[in-house]
Amino acid sequence: MTGSGSAAMSATRSEWEMAAEILSYLKEHPEASDTFEGIAEWWIMRQRVRVEVETLKKVLCQLTEGGLLEEFGKKDNPQYRLKAWRN
View 1 (cartoon, rainbow, N blue to C red):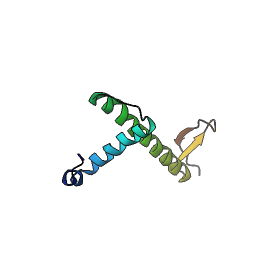
View 2 (view 1 turned 90 degrees about the vertical axis):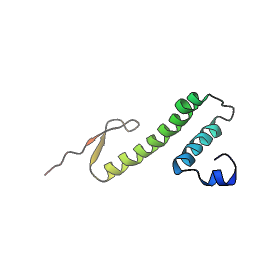
View 3 (view 1 turned 120 degrees about the vertical axis):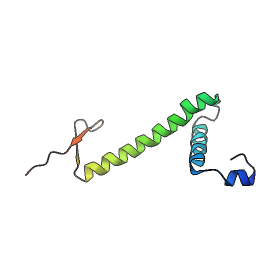
């Protein structure tokens, strides 16, 4: 990932994913700069939480549509629970 052809080609999937997270953060905050610790705590974690939230939305929708969960309460901020099995 250093820019030399062979080093860039040997990056692991995890390294490529982390590079994408850093670049995604910088795309949203082009003037950002931080220390190693700040990048780890704020940039990387923020991007990972965002991805996990999107995944959670999809999973909740799939479980609800599949009849395993039920959605109730306010439409703009629903709650989810195990769907009661009715005979």
